[in-house]
Length: 147
Image (cartoon, rainbow, N blue to C red; front, side):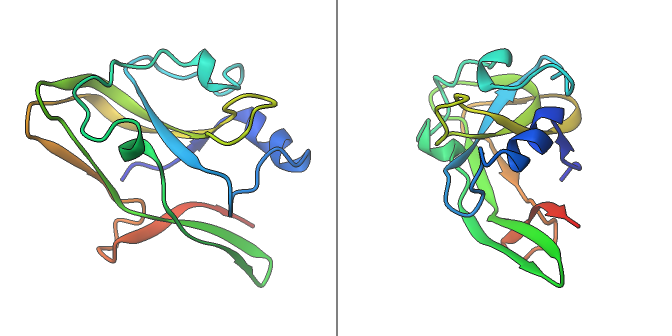
């Protein structure tokens, strides 16, 4: 998995109690347009692809948090790996996978960060993409660490 690039607004939103990363519903958005970390702040700033052929949309884009905890002053947000599957047609192209907070309403759907796959991906009918947050093969991995 690519490294998460955080949006600048995420730092301020953490300091101002916008996010509860342990209990808010985090989700993914797919885009083929490069996000701008300094000015994109909410999901409405992102040009999303059509999700028509994404199986179990929108629930397949929900992130399942496995743990939200700190040890020795280091916080880790760990999520279960997830799979996106095209069904009934293609999904994409998309290059960026954006993580956002789907619970918050003020601001609505604030952005956290994004993964850049380096080139556009298209899932053809029946193809899947597994998002392995930790790339450690355990089924769970760190979305982010704060030290």
